[in-house]
Image (cartoon, rainbow, N blue to C red; front, side, top):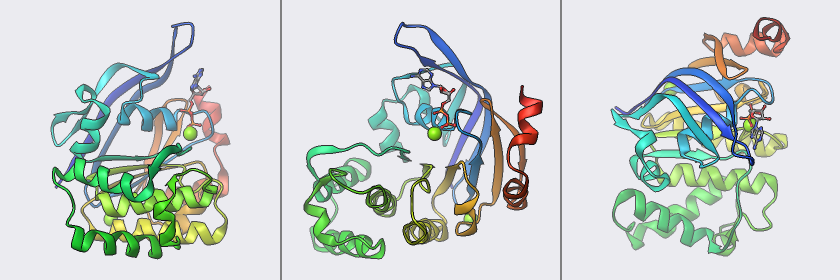
Length: 253
Ligand code: ADP
Ligand code: MG
Ligand code: MG
């Protein structure tokens, strides 16, 4: 059973002039395989900074704390090593990869993570099946990654990656933002399938409570000004839906 442990994580963003702007002020979080955690907070509270720091984005400097996956020091790993160790990040703004088809991208990623190429005999069907379940035309596998994809297609493609790569821990950064209700339902169903297999720890980052009508979190963490200020079960999401973040803003300032 895998476990991601974040202890007293402190992170600054590197400004172009070389200065550091502190964003995360001591984040503590434990995500176990089979658990779904929702991190909910207002814009600018540092949610994406948390996701990018765990993924190893060079724009962020870790100034304190630890992140381990099954006891291994994640912060000491390269971005590739983090992916091979079983960490997966679906970004708020997925990047285009010109010249690399979806099919090639997924096969290369799968090979890197598993340490061997997927069996040709079953891989094609697996890819096609996963795309169809996500409401994507399998012909899209021949197109370049995210090039000319709509917002919804990018998010569907991310869930195809999630289903096929079977990470130990997946961080989904605002996978719900910008989706219409049909896309939200399909994306949520995909996440629910991953949730149901019980092997993956899910960290769902979101600004809105809407997606939590489709995906049931086991734990909800309220994130304000770079730290977790309240934790609870799914009922906390309902409370946020009714009351918003305003009452935290007072205590956070
Ligand atoms: P969220 O995902 O919760 O909306 P972010 O992690 O994107 O929050 O941003 C957290 C804070 O870091 C914000 O105040 C944002 O303005 C700041 N920030 C992020 N990147 C930069 C940057 N390159 N330069 C200056 N401030 C930044
Ligand atoms: Mg569960
Ligand atoms: Mg964000």
